[in-house]
Amino acid sequence: MKLALRIAGSAAILFIAFLMFSRAAFAQLGPSGSAAAAPSATSLPLSGRTAQSGSVTATQSPIPGTTTSVNTLNPTIEVQGAYAGSVSGAQPPFSGKLSLQEAVERGIKYNLGAVGMAQAVRQASGQSKIARSALLPNISGYLQDTEEQTNLAAFGLRFKLSPSSGFSIPTIVGPFNYFDLRAQLTQSVYDLTARNNYRASQETLRASEFSVDDARDLVVLAVGGAYLQVIAAQARVDSARAQLDTANALYQQTLQQFQFGRVPQLDVNRSKVEVLTQQQRLSSLQNDANKQKVNLARLTGLPPTELYAISDDIPFSPAPPLVFEDALKQALAQRSDLKAAQAQVRAAEREQAAAHAEHLPSLAASANYGDIGTSPESHGTFSAVATLNIPIWAGGRVSGDIEQAQAALAQRQAELDDLKGQIGADIRNAFSDLQAASSQVDVAQQNLEVTRQTLDQTRQRLEAGVSNNVELVQSQESVADAELDYINSVFAHNVAKLNLARAMGQAADSLPQYLKTK
Image (cartoon, rainbow, N blue to C red; front, side):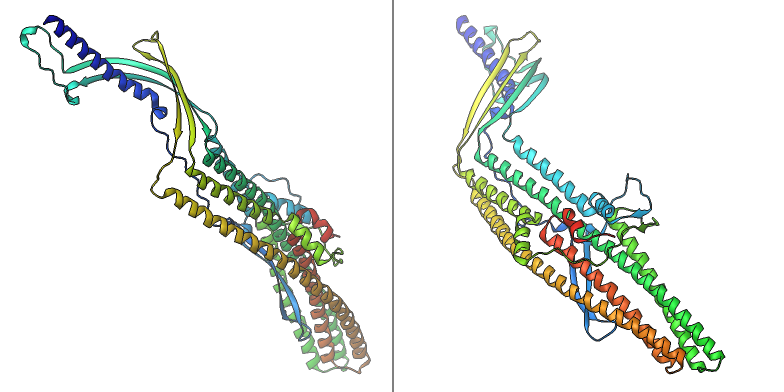
């Protein structure tokens, strides 16, 4: 009887010990002691385009001409979204004079569109590192000190022993304590889903890097167009100021002739009205020039209150000799937005492969080593686990992931095809605008020469008394309008060259070739 009680007591004590230390063992296993979760493909956005940064486009629209009823080109650089702003902060010293090259460099560095795309690259780089971490070893360690008291009755243990046996089993065990100092390692051995996720993240990172290069081209188009706007605005101001000087001289000439009785008061009044008209025009054009300089400052990171002058003049110069087929071939080879779209397609292909790989088994290994017991001198313990995860049924999740990946791939292939067509249209439109603007410059230059000759002849006829003041005022207005037409034509031609450089790609590098400063 006593032997049986001893055996029963020993069994109870062993059971209690097993219960206590099995809980500690499960605690030390951590992630390796549980079934590995099935790997899942990451979900890409449906579209690969980054429209949140804004856009920069060059347009040429016909408007009624100032001298005749023939339409002339009206170039516009439309800047939307982040590209219309800039960041402030520590900037290089500024001399007060802004060249075209310096304006472009400042725009690339401080324009909000370019800054935003640079941050998008950092974000994509971080996401790629996260995807790579699933393929690399993960090592962690912990120190755990446990103080515990256990109620055996809570586990359903009921010990019924005879009081005469002189032996009893307590229902409350403890309190007792132990510590666990342990290091853990987990490593993915074979996981095609995680591997394809990482490859997709690398392609997304490449697409973001190409988008940064494309953002540089857009900044060049925006800043270059704004710089040309300032040049044209100042040229209009200079022309209006010259016309005002001419109107004052003609007014003085008419006033002298009136004093000698050679012209009536009506001619004097008409000359005075022309002077006031030119003053009003000069004031309006000066205001427009000031606003254009503020717009250029916003694009390049300069304070809007900065008083600066532009140091470069960009006169008319013929475009570099180039045919449409060569320009299109060059654009398809070096346009950064096209390279970004191709990388987005490759990323979608990797994600589709990752979704299909969810059907395949994956293999992972984990191990831990540490010291567990009531004192640091306890015996070391370890475990090594290899886990083969075999997907059987995931409730339709895998087919859903595949369907999402296929939709993203189809959308990005469609966007790539659309972009190729858009590049062809950009090159064709740029060539068309360049040809029309070049012809317009020739016509405007000839018209300016003719109107100036007509004004000189009309002044001579007025001095000789064979003409009246009406013809003189009309001739003066014709010269003013012809000068504005010529300024607009040169501006349209320069914008067309700038737009062609952007349409072909690498606009920042080819800018001196297309816009030759003076």
